[in-house]
Image (cartoon, rainbow, N blue to C red):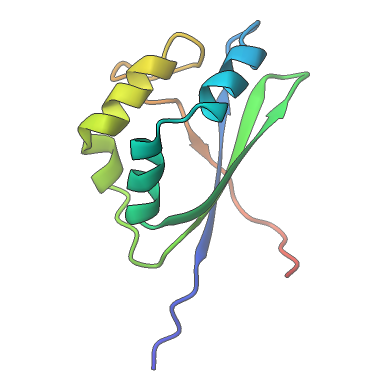
Amino acid sequence: MENKRTIRNAFKMKLKPGFEAEYKKRHDEIWPELQRLLSETGIQDYSIFLDEETLILFAVQKISPDFDQRRLPSHPLVKKWWAYMADIMDTNPDHSPIAIPLKEVFHLE
């Protein structure tokens, strides 16, 4: 039997200066339909941390092994969220956040 373990995924993004409280507010009020979509696509756990000195956002996700990373970027709801967040974050031309993958170098379970 194949062992299907969750995968940890980490990446960083950048917040624009002065938008710390607004970023938190928007995530405190995350759309329920977006939460459902993330869960349905295989994101089982998702945390975002802010380094207040650099405004770097550090995200960690636990995703299912069958998570299809191509599905979310093309979903209209995700595109709507990106447009909603684009004024307070560094983004690509399509409004997706500039997300830089991070390499795991240590894990203790």
